[in-house]
Length: 264
Image 1 (cartoon, one colour):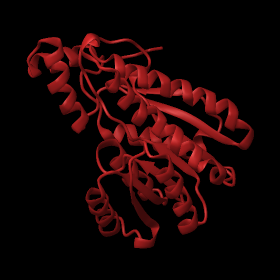
Image 2 (spheres, helix red, strand yellow; image 1 turned 60 degrees about the horizontal axis):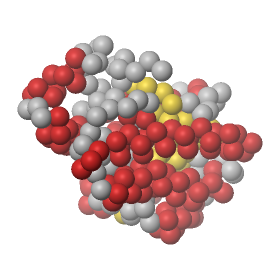
Image 3 (cartoon, helix red, strand yellow; image 1 turned 180 degrees about the vertical axis):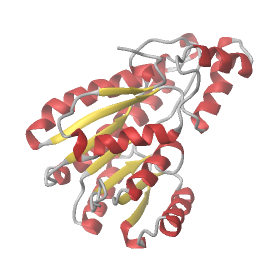
Image 4 (cartoon, helix red, strand yellow; image 1 turned 30 degrees about the vertical axis):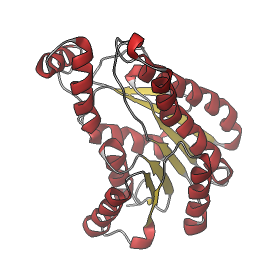
C-alpha cells in the first residue's frame, strides 16, 4: 500500500522539538523526504539519527539546516539547497514560533517586533523562498502553524495574539494568490498542547495573571470541553492530512485542534 506522502519533499521549520518534531516523524512514516530547519543544530542531528534508526530512513532522505527564520537570506539559501539536494519541494510547514506573556502596558515595542519577526515574517520569508519551487509541484502545500490565539482576544498576550491573527490573515491572502498555481495554503490552530511552550506558558502566564501554576493549569483545563490539553501527535495528524491528497479541495482555512475551546 502506497504511503500518503511517498517521495514528497517537505520543508519543516521549528523542527527540533515539540509539534515540529512530531510532524517530521509523521511525515517520515508516510514516505516524505525531509528538510528540517531550526536554530538548534544539535537537536536536528539527534532527530535525524532517530529517524534513520527507528524508521529506516536513508541518511540522504533527511537534510538539516540550522538557521533563524528571521534571516531572509538564510531562508532563501535553505530553499535553494533543498531543491538542489532533492530536486523538488512539495510541502512547506511554517512551524517556527515563539511565545511571550505579560500585561499590555509592560510590553515594549521590541516584544511585538520579536514575535512578529518570528511568527509572521519568518513564514513570509519561507513562503517567498519556496514559492518558485512549489509552483513546479503537482500538489503543493503550505501549512502555517497558527493558534487559537489568532481567533480571539486574551489577557496578557497581546503581542502573541496579534502575531497569530496576522498569520491567519496571511494564510487567507496567500490562498487567494497561490490558488492559480495549485498551491493550497492552510493554517492549523492548536489550543493548549503538551510541549515545552506550554510549560513556559504555565510559568509566565500564571505570573501575569497572579495565579500559581497549578491554579492557572486548572483554569486552563476548565476552558476545554474535552477536559485535557492536546498531544503533539494530534496536531501532526492534522498537518499530515493537510499535506496529503485528501485535503486537495481545501485552501485558506484555519482549523482548530483545541479540544473544543473555540467554535468560530
